[in-house]
Length: 491
Image (cartoon, rainbow, N blue to C red; front, side, top):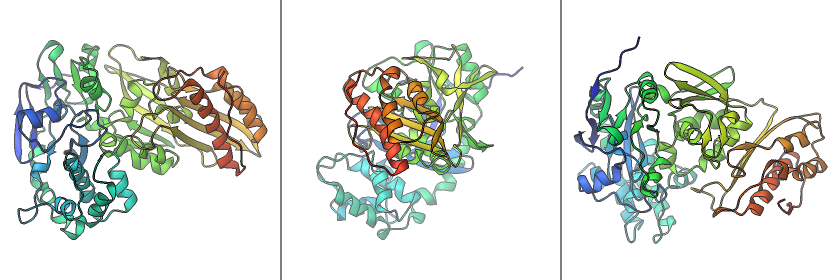
């Protein structure tokens, strides 16, 4: 019989160079409020309060084995309770080798990368994170690193010029965060005492489990608790919807849930793996996922958000469920010591309802790598290209042999109350020649699978037209034929 780990009634983390111990922390307290209100560190700004504008960007360093990894995060939706054993770095901690401006700051000054200055600290911190991992980035890499930072007055070209020039002001290898890395690693390791963190009681209770087994025990005993990994969705429940999310169980520090592995052509992703950490395996082994992953939020959201969370919250417009369903992915659920694995498509039952018993949690996702000869494509339709929520997302996994469709698995997000397969469309394709005539016939049966709604992101007619045209796009791109875009009316 497994014994419970010892409990500790406080959080411990590093803030810049200071060790912080907190004994009174609300489950919904944000890092941004802690920095500005409790510590008077006003360089971190509140812009959107939803992880969209990047004005609140700070770095959070975490131990990954014996390595210390720093990532830009949105302090406005990052909860303070998730920081146990981490190193938080704000813009006040930046400094040059001579004690003056940091190379990132000096470049922004010299290349006029700031006007009103409100967004500037966030840009500096995002560029700082980029500079430490890639001192001489390409323009495409810079643009990707700044997807999550918005500026309404400077114009991005001046910021791009500054980003290109940072390494001319100093060497990333001599940066204070690099020079002090061994010391910080030692301090963070000293905080790892194997204890469960428990603060507060009742609805104000905050728990940071010591291990995955401890997590399973905590959630089985308190099935009404809210499990929070990256908080890219739950954070908005607090900042925008003022929802009560307590009691909360924070799982971001559980290394065993942050593992990615591959066995016999199936990639297994722990429920705590972020989009950033999953990127290398998924984008390399399943290249069609690369453009999709590149468009999920900005760097800050990808560093925080998890694929497990994207699945567990059951949103009909989550970006990862449709392609994973099309690939035949499965999910392992755990309650206490008991586990079961089901097809991912069976996990989603109805809007806000999943096949998950009280006290049962998502532990891992298993993604089969498509065969080399398979046709796999993913397309996302949004109002703006980057950092936007899906209106329609289609994922297509087909096998075509000798010009005939022998298998088809097609899944959509944004078209129903859950991520859903287009089974009538699949049936209209299988056994048929991969031709324009077959595609047009399949487009005519979409109404048998979907009755989309109209909302702020798209009308029902637009969604239906887009869904049909995505199938046409897959055909055109795979066959080299040209086509007139469908203007079918939604049934």
